[in-house]
Amino acid sequence: MRVIIAGSGLSGLVMGHCLLRAGIDDFVILERRPDPVERSGSVIGLFPQTFRVLDQLDLVDDIKKLSPPLHHWLHLDSRGRTIYDGEFFDCLEANHGHPSTLLMRRDLMEVLYSKLPDAERRVFPNKKVTGIEQDDSSVTVTCADGSTFKGDVLVGCDGVHSAVRRFAIEQPRGELKPPLRSEYRGLFGSCPRPDGLAPCNVTETHNTGIVFMILCTEDTAFWLITHRKDKGAPDSQKYSAEDIQALVEKYENHSVAPGAKITFGDLWRARDPVPGPGMYDYHEGVAKRWYNGRVVIVGDAAHKMTPNLGQGGNNSIEDVASLINQLNALVKEKPSPTTAELEGAFARFQKEREARVKFIAGMTGRYTRWTSWRNWPSWFMQYWVWPLLGDRFIVNRLLSPMIRESIKLDFVEEKHLPAGKVAWKYR
Image 1 (cartoon, rainbow, N blue to C red):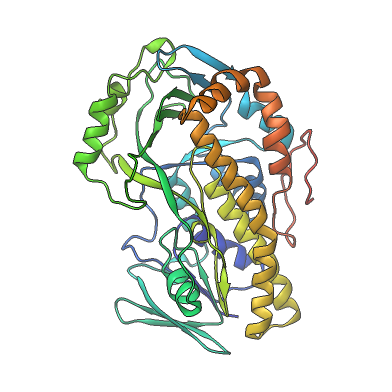
Image 2 (cartoon, rainbow, N blue to C red):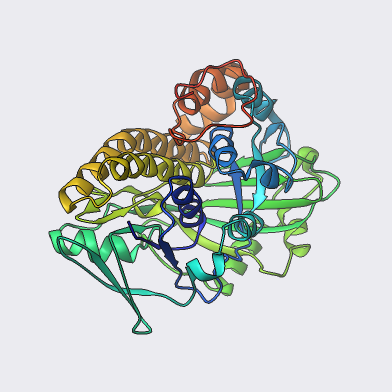
């Protein structure tokens, strides 16, 4: 079986590693950018369930070396006063064995790319997908430079604006685009960690319509500023340097640390210039259908959620594990599956993942609205209810039940599965 993967981001590179574990070594990864490794200045948080898959791919040690585990999650009001401070991430690690950690996205991509065997001949940059055709025996991808790639399966790992979804799933079926709304936008960047922000912790400062999330490693502070958009603003827009500067000027004197000792302006003035800050819309929505014929989509191409709980990337990896489990089982039985047999595998994949993704996306969306105090019930929930419940209750009753049901590869053993208080559903 020959597999074509569109997109060399997180899910695309993990897909390549998983295919090799399944014995499917005939695949190519098409990347529209000139650099096959994403050089974004954004960060990504990895949760315990993702480390299980990375362990199966022999990547866990390399990735854990990139950053130490996270510990506390501190919540502040606009004056720098503590709303509550709990051992959120320590509770997760105690329950599930593996830690939660924070990584520069580009560092994670470097590991995934450098550890992929024969990456130079498998990953093709400057391959923007402009057309997709399929018949009963194959699928052919056409790129902007005129090159074509023919295979048995096409997997769209190409993000929220997926060309694979648009060309191969929506248009042939005459279906509408997924209901991608955008009520919030985010400004992200990084700077050297100042003394007033503790290492290996997350600090969130809350106010009406905005929340400042500062995620610290030992030497770097990554910030994600979530801001509610103006009423009537378009769901998808690009932001200029002037747009970013306007938001900075509005909130540069806002406290972002305990005791109001550090302002957002302090972080902004110390910002890392390369690759520099960026601003983007938080799209939310789940596609109606994730496959058509020999084509299937995963990750942000199929479902998009707000980033405040760090579940987007983790769920993309879970998608990949679920899909590869289905393909592995099918190919072992039918080395050259028909289109109908592939659609059956894709349908089982979507059925296994869709309800779970909708639940998680709903939870992350509610969290974004609670923490940005969208209305007085959100403020009441964040300021009074959550501190009364405490991190241990929230982790044990909300996060751990979700994490324990996460999917891993069902045909590869784990080498390092630390003991935890909560039993995994899939051992």
